[in-house]
Picture 1 (cartoon, rainbow, N blue to C red):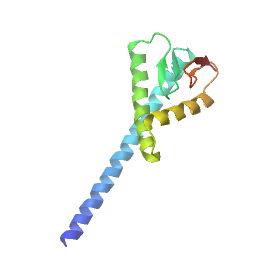
Picture 2: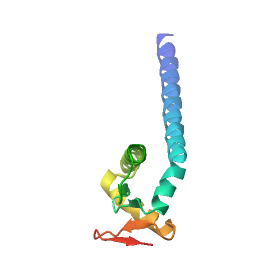
Picture 3: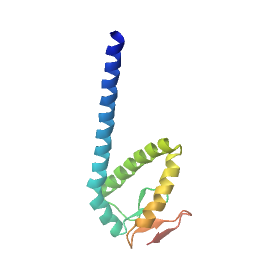
Picture 4: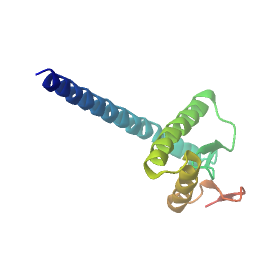
Length: 123
């Protein structure tokens, strides 16, 4: 009877952990969506570009709120890259570099991108 109780407690703990992870993923997705309009505007103005590590980088003067949004975006991207790297047996740096290549493919005309060799160009 005691082993059955322990098993039930383990199942409840696992379900709680799964729900917590799911809630964290949803919150992460929502933060990305909430920042997207501002970041797209900054990219369109040439104030922010996508670097070759899969992160945003200021290319002009940003006000504190704009810089905070860029920093928050990069922190959340790093969280995602870390999670992916664990799943695929890679490093967050390699995941970020691969993501940078994908971002460059779908970037809007006029956005600033950083080539793998480090030079910046406008799409």
